Length: 376
Ligand SMILES: *Cc1c(COP(=O)(O)O)cnc(C)c1O
Image (cartoon, rainbow, N blue to C red; front, side, top):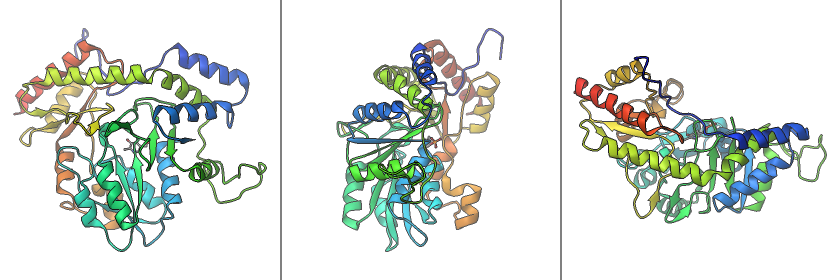
C-alpha cells in the first residue's frame, strides 16, 4: 500500500453524537440493565419493522436459540436450514440437541430453495430456519405454505435483513417470528445485541422471561417460573440501538446508494458478477456487497492483491455443513449441497458500510479489476 492510499475496512459502524448523548443519559441514570431504555428500544424496533411485539436479546444467536427452544425441538428432531449462512442459523438447532438438515440454496438468491426444503422433509422434521442471506428476503410465501402443510414451525433468521421487504411489506411484519442482529457490521449496531419480533403476545412474554433467567412478569427477583438464560441486552446497548433506529432511513438510503455505486462501477468488469437485483417481490436491505467470481478466477490471488492494497475482504460465506465440527459430528461432506458449495468457493465480500466514500469504492473496483486481469 502506498502512503497516499488509505486502508478501506470491510465494515465499520455509523455513529455520531446522538449515540453518545443517549448512552450518556443511561450512564447518568444508573439504570444499566432492565431499565426503561430496553422497552423504548423494543417499541421503536417493533414499529420500524411492522411487528406487534419485539423482545431484545444479547445477540442474534441468542434470539435464534430462544425461538428453537420455544419450538420445542429436542434430540431426535430435525430442522431444515440453509448451508449458505453464518453458523448461528444452524447452531441454534444443535444447541437443543436436534439435528440440522441442510437443503440447498437457489443459484441466484443464495437463499433456501423451497423445492429442496420440501424434498428434505422427513417424519422427524419439526422446523425450518430460513435465512435472508446478505439482506435478500427468503421465499417467505412458499416456505410458509410448505410449513403449514407439513405442520412445521418457521423461524426466520433476518439477522442481515433489517429494512428488507418481501411482497411490499417489511421483514418482521409477515407473521413468522424473526431474529435481527446488531453486531457492529450489521445495518444498525448495539455493540452486541439482537431482537426477536413476534406476532404472538404469549411468545413475546415467554421470550422476555427466557432471556431473563426464567423470571415471570409478576414474580420477584428470585422467583423463576422456568429454566431460563441470561440473554439480556443491557440499557447501554439499547441506547445505542435507539440512536441508530432514529436514523435508520438515512442508513438504509446511504447503503442503497453505495451498493448502486458499486454495481455501476463494476459494470462491464470481466470475471465478477454483481449481487442479484431486486424484483417485484424482494427488496434487499444492503448488509454486505458480495460479488461472485467466475469459476476460472483464482480467488486467493485476488484476495492477496486486495489485502496488499489495504482493502478489506472476506470469503463470505463458507458452507456450514463443511465446517470441521459439522463434518465430525454429522459426517457431512462435499456434494451434499452443490449449489451452496459452488457459491462458497467463488463469493467475495468487498468493503461495504454506511459511510463508505465514493473515492474508496472507486479504488476498490480499480484494484479488483487489476487483480482479476492478473488472475484470469
Ligand atoms: C449476524 C448473524 C447472526 C447473529 O449474529 P450474532 O453475532 O450472534 O448477533 C445470525 N445469523 C446470520 C445470518 C447473521 O449474519
